[in-house]
Length: 263
Length: 349
Image (cartoon, rainbow over all chains, first blue to last red; front, side, top):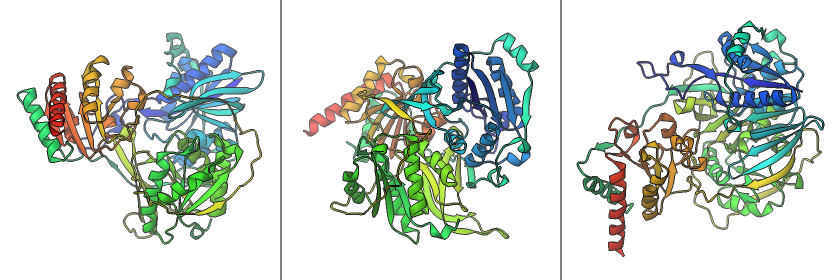
């Protein structure tokens, strides 16, 4: 069985967001990590490797420095790594990103493609389902559990909704988007880290993408365009009091609630 | 693609178990106000399901001028492929200028798949939608298009905000966060034009099989519907200590919600989480108790009408968004507040 996991290098928003003196985000100062949902997807793939001897390939699209997350994935146990990087691919929205990744995936054999549900920088959750559409394969989003039946060439997924879950069965090949809740990703092993830096990362550029028109790539191939982007402006500050006693605090709150006709 | 052929604002009227989701009505409210600024003022709801025609009148009461119904047994429960086929076929046939979809567990799967099939842009998880010019400012050598959908969304864990347009493709598609847009007051007895449409469904390899549906009817409250939320953070100290918040909520007929730290610690279920990775809420009154006010939390509650924060740390960022901030010990202030409110309400009766 062959599994391809699509991963993304993202700035770590959890580990403290850094701002420049002018109040804009300092992306360069933030730690670059493997996107958490993608890491859960990788762990799911590695469990299929443990269970069935699946071959696990990780693929990322990004700047050359995204090599770091591929090395991390190799150190966790992935077998092969592919970096898709090219200047003409920059500025891509989710349509152009998914067209690019689909173009790369067409070069590979796969039974299962796993992506994270969403990346913590964009939070769109769009690229996974869009890749599946470009490839014409089924998608199951929001996976909490994945069970593969290798003989029957099917996969059964616990698919989360707001107030329920579905157990959904699909034919392979299939694309699954993974939730962080899926599992607890393993750590890199010291041996794995050592080997990861020995292994070769395949680098693909525009010319290596299969069956994709230039009009679907990069900034020019992006249907959506940014009209305006800004770091968030904070709401004006209200009142703040430091009462001497709980009673005084209560007087203050109840006074405000009466003023606003809530009580 | 001739952009002029695409007319009108459409919404995906999500239903589950043949009951309309709240987001469908919220989208209608927004669609109506967007249509005011467009040449075509008719609002169309697209209703997909099996045996769902009975929902048409409710859509009319909440602002739909027309309802396109695709009623087919293949659409009984949500599955990506038949729903994508239905919605993409409606787009090809009826050519909407704008299509809004809820950013729900269904919409965030359906939206991207449909937008890829019809080759258009999709902006995720929008919190604000307007009609305006793109580019915003006229620039020499660049055609400025008018009456474009300007879609605003937070990104980067709520730290940045971007406004996005889709000037050269149609429909302009957005998924919209539940709880952000306002429904209209229902117009009793309103009727909509009903169009029945069926593109035909032929199973292929993309069709999945639903083996089992398990409803998780946990007794969890709907925090997005609550008018008053009493929200607790890590500062509450323990799951047991949430009792004092529950007592306050009870007196106010409110609901208890919480921050991500509380969910991560396993004190409360994820359904009660407010924030960028939880739910967006805009109650009339929001108590932030023992919540420091991380940006990702604030992103989910800053639109509340009144925010009251109680925190012992006077430098907590929550005080930057609170209308009324009280620096104090929540263990003393909250029970005292509950007691006083009980007395006040008893005196009234």
